[in-house]
Image 1: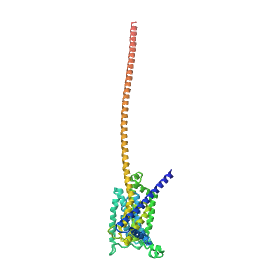
Image 2: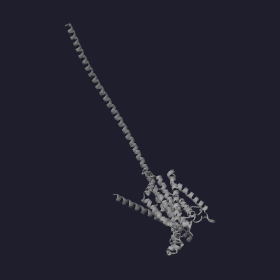
Image 3: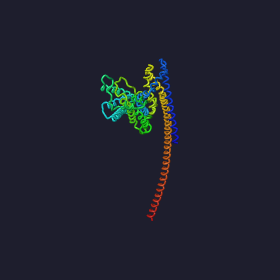
Image 4: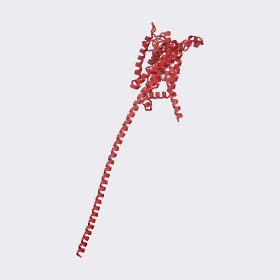
Amino acid sequence: MTENTNQVQAKRNTARGNSKLLFTIISILLGFLVGAIVLLISGYDPIEGYQALFQGIFKTPRNVGWAIVTSTPIILTGLGVCFAFQTGLFNMGAEGQFIIGTIVGFLVGYKLPLPPIIHPIVAILLAMLAGALYGALAGFIKARFGIHEVISTIMLNWVAFYFQNFVGYANQQPNSMASFDVLDSAKITMFDKATIKTFGPFFKKFFKAPIHYGTLLAIIAVIVVWYILNKTVLGYELKAVGLNREASEYGGINSGKKIVQSMAISGAICALAGVTQILGFTYALSIISAMDNYGFDGLAVSLLAGNNPIGVIFSGLFFGSLKYAGSNIQRVMGVPTEIINIIIGTIILFTAVPLVFRIIRAKHKNRKEAKNLAKEEKLISQESEKSTVGVKEKETILKDHNEKENELIKKDKQVENGQIKKETKLVSNSSKNVINETGEEIIVRTVESEEE
């Protein structure tokens, strides 16, 4: 019986996964269709535009490498958002946590000289710790004060943004809008130029892009997150809290603690994206007037992946490739790079439609269940009132019966007492008569004896 149930559940999960994949593919196709319509309206040839777009990704191995480099931070921020989504939390603070990872990575990489292998490890661990604390702060605010994580994380994004500019100005290079570079011992570039020259033609071109160990760390992080969510008690408890906080508390799970843990893990992953970006690609803090949007792109990546950790890899590569290739379509045709944002936005819009319908359906179902529950409670109260009235009537009848029975018992006792009194009186009267007669006899006998 259990095996059959597991098989049925597995089939349902497979069917659900296939339907999500199909809808994602349809959403992507619709996004490209809308992009083509916009190109036509703007006076550009859609076929030529998309040809330039895909050539920007696949034309040379170097382009493929650059697409991977662009995708790496988006994969990690998408994974952080995905983890929070899986546990019922909406982490809008991925951008701020990314920035915190960047700041700590820069400070450790620039200010703290360490041996080459140890240096990046220390920087990454400290950056992830800082990101975890920053995410946990939003989780604590929700668990302790009930303030929604969307509000707190958006506010914390701006705190991190201005803090980055503060650190950047404090370490600014002369005549530049960026800080000094991190030390060479902290960099995580995969191969140096001398090593790349020894490779074959394909990899020699591929590694002309700044491929770094952050890509490998992103893949490892995806596997770890998948394992935590699906194979550990912690993942089960986090998802239980996300599905129903009240029910999980009834089951003995500390929901407040799990919310803080979930946001901490999500923040650590987003900070990993930031620290690998600065140690592997940018090397310096930029003094910026706007956010880089890596965290907000992560929201789109997670949504397109259906909040599946494995799917985040593919959706992240897709988004990163589009963003990198946008410069090529602008260079070849003069099309503004905003066309890429239009395509991405349309894809996300169509991807979000089922989610919106599920939310509406869930609300309608909850309202219907609430109405049915109210009706049931009303019927139960009416029945209880009727039963209460019936009990009172029975109690009244029983009381009357007992009173009548007591009256009859009293009457019977009175009758019995009356008969006993009569019998006692008769007995006493007969005794007196006997005594009197005896007395008279004694008197008579006494008189007679005297006369004699």
